[in-house]
Length: 339
Length: 293
Figure 1 (tube, rainbow over the protein chains, first blue to last red):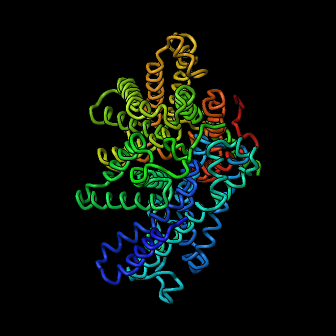
Figure 2 (cartoon, rainbow over the protein chains, first blue to last red):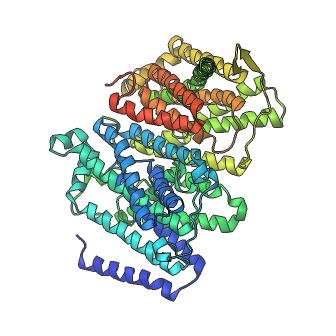
C-alpha cells in the first residue's frame, strides 16, 4: 500500500522527530509535544472504531480506568506500572466486552449505542468520585514518587525520555491504524457500517468483528490513560474520564479527519495548541474559554466540514480516487439509523 | 432484632416513596428527550445542560433580582423553550439531511458550549436558591415539600403535554409527523414549523424540570452531568421515542437510585442503576416495552 516515496517521507519525518529533543531542549515546548503525542494516541484509538460508524462516547471511561487502575495498584499494592498497565488494560477491555456484547449482539446501533456508551463514561466518572476514600474523588490523585528504581516505577524527570516514550506509543498507534486499514477486518467493518444485514448475509460475523475492534480500541485508550497518568503524575476524574473527555476525543478526531491515519494527530495538534494559546492569551480568566471555542468549532465543523481538515485537504489534493469508496464519498456516513 | 427491623422498614418505605417522588422529575426529563427523538429523530446530548441553564435562570431571577419563585418559573420555562427552539434552528435544522449521528455529535458540541458558557459567565461556585421548604413528617417518615411539589408539578406538566398532544390540532400534527415524516409534508403540514414547536416544547419541559430541580439541588456548570446520563439510560431502557416506556423506566430507575442510596452513597445508586441497565439490555434489548418497526 505504502509507496516508496511515502515510505521515505515517513522515514525522514520520523528521524526528524526522534532527533528533535537532542537538538531542541526547551522544556515547555517539549511538554506540549509530549501531550500532543499522548493525546494523539488516544484520539487515534478512538478513531479506530469511530471511522466504522461505531461512535463511542465511552472512551473517557476506558481512559479513566487505564489511568486510575494503574495509579491505584502502584500506590496501594506497590505494583509496578509495568504490571499495572496491562492489568488496567485488561480491566478496560473487560468492561468494553461487557458493554459491547449486548450492544452488538442485539443490534444496538446509532443513537442507542451512543447513549449507552455515553452513560458508561458517566458511570466510570461516578465510580471514581464515589470511591473517594481510595481515589481522592474529584480532588484528583497522585501516584507516589518512587525512591527506588525509576525505570521500574515508570517515572522519569527527564522530558526527553518522556518525549521518546510518547513518540513510540504514538507510532505504535499509527502502525496499528495502518494494520487495521490493510486487514480484512476493515472491509468487513466497512460493510457493516454500510448495511449490517447485507454484511451478515455476505458471511461477516457482525458481532465478532465489532467486538474485536471495540476491544482493540478500548485497550489502546486505557494504555493512553495510563501513560498520561505516568507522565503528568496527577489525574482528576475530569481530566481523564467522563463525558467531556469522550467528547474531546470525538471533536479532535472529527476536526482532524476520521478516515486518514494522521487525522486524529492533526486534531490533537489543533486542539492542544488552541487550548494553550487561549490559556496564555487569557491567563486564569481562560477557564472555560477553550471548551467554549471547542464546542463552537465542533458544531461548525460537523455542519460545514464533516470530513475534517486533513481529510478535506487530502480530497482537494487528489480529486480522482483509483477505487471510489462509497463509504467515504457520502458525507461522513459514519452510521446509519438503528436497523 | 425486632426493633431493628421496624426501623429498617420505615426507612425502606421512606426510600421507596422518595424514589417515586424522584421518578416524577426523571420521567419529565425523559418525556422531553423522547418527544424530541420521536418527532425530529434527533437526540439532544445537551438536554441536561439546557436544564442547567434553566436552573441558573431561576437562581438569578430569584436570588439576584428578587423575583418571586412563582413568577420566575414561567419566565424560566419560556427562556429554555426559546433556547430549545434556537438550538433546533441553529444547529439541527442545517443538519436535518446529514447522517443522524452527526446531529447527535453537533449537540455534543452544544453541550461543551453551554457548560463552558456557564463556567465563563457564572463561575464554578455552587449556588442555591436559598429557599428552604419545610419537611413533612408523616409518622416516622420525613419527606421534603420540595420533592412533593416537584412530583406534583412534573405530573401536571406531563398531563398538560398529553392533553396538548391529543386535543389540539398542532399536537395531532406532531404525533402524525412522528409516524411518517415524509407524507405529512404532502398533507400540507409545515414540518419546519412543527419541528420548531416540538423543540420549544422539549425546551419548555427542560425548563420545568429546571424549576423543580433547583429547589432540591445546588446549581453549578456541571450539574447536568449528574442527571444527564441517567436520563439517557432511562430513554434507552424505555425505548427511545416511547413515552410510556420512558415513564415506567423513570420510576424503575428512581427506585433503584433511591434504594441504592439507602444502603450506600448516592453515587453507588447510579452505579447500581447502570448495572441493572446492562442486565436489562441482555433481557430486553429493544427497551422495556418493545415497539419496533
